[in-house]
Every structure is written in C-alpha cells, then in structure tokens.
Image 1 (tube, one colour):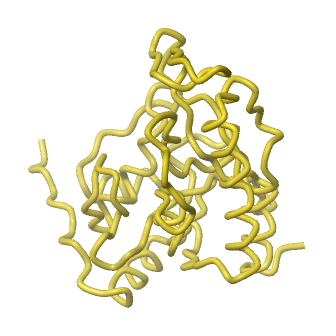
Image 2 (tube, helix red, strand yellow):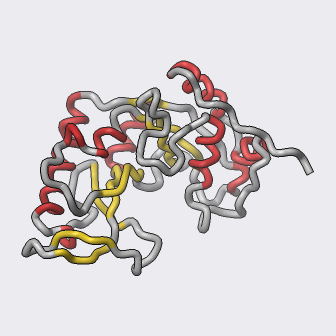
Image 3 (cartoon, helix red, strand yellow):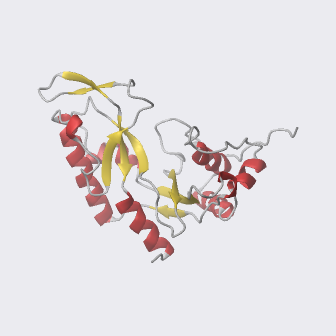
Length: 229
C-alpha cells in the first residue's frame, strides 16, 4: 500500500494558481486521484462533491466548507462546471445558501452572492454520464470577473429574489424567477427544514434554499471564452 500523498500548499498568488489549473487540463480524474492516493468512487450518485474536492486538493484551496471564497487571500472562488461533448454546461452552478431570515439592511454590495461571484476560477470538466468517471478529463481554466453589464443583471436577479424572500413569498419562488440567477431548494431530504418568513410576516418552516447560476448564463460565458459554436 502506497503512502498518502500530501496535497500542494496554498498558492501564493494568482499566477501560481492559474499555472496549477492549467497543468490539470487534459488529465483524467483517475490520474489526478492517483497522484494524491485518493480513492475513486464508482460514480457520483452518493459523492456529488468528489470532483470539486479533487480539484480543490490539487489547487491548494483553503476554504473547505467555510463560507468564504476558496482562495480567500486571492479573492477567488473555484467553480467546477460539468460540460457535454460540445462544451455546454450540463447543470446549474451552486453559488451559496440563500438567507431566509435576518435580511433587513442587506444590499447587493454586501451580499454573499456578490462576494462569491466577484472573481471565479471556472474549471470545466467532462460530465457526460456515458463516460466512465475514471476516464473523464479536466478542461482549460477560465478566470472571470463580471463586467458592468453582467453585474447589473445579477444584481437585478438577486434583488428580485431577495424581495420575494423578505415579503414572505419564498414558497412562491420557482426556478423560472431570475434571468441568470435562480433560487432552488437545497436540502439532503424533505425533513431538513429551516425557518423563513411567511406571507403575513409569521415564522414558517421550509426547505433551505440556495442561489444557483442558470445554464443560460454559464453556457454563453464558456462559449465566448472558448470560441464555441
């Protein structure tokens, strides 16, 4: 049995982080897991976060499960994004948990969503389920920060969704609300309830919610950067 490999230390600067990310491009999940002596799951049904964890370990991310950015000292968040053979996203991208209470005085400028999306290192990964997990490869990285137009639309989506939460309409929010940003239930099961505000200002119990980026945002973002059709 081989001795455990130690993951790399936290990158000291942006250039070092990007260099590490570029070195991962083209490598298979099996090869990357072997380099760290990390056991591979048979599939991702019960290990949905495994790919993200694998890349975090290789890149030296420091946040773990904490609420801060993955590379807080660089102000950069890491997001893996499963894509199909044409480079199109296969699923929405989780941003952060949506706060359902205690939102008086919260603004876009001070919001967790804006903080998480200030600068993102996107790493596409092969996500086609017909491909065995071990054979799937990592794509080229993209370091992105929103331009003025993108920030304005994200802000409008966030304000629309937060207004609904504050006004006691959390149960009426659907995945169709928001152009690029949506809110969806995020819970391990239907019994994991949390407190929220009801229609008449009363406390209610509901499923936790999370902010997600829609594919209508991440798809064009990847297409522009990688010159996809």
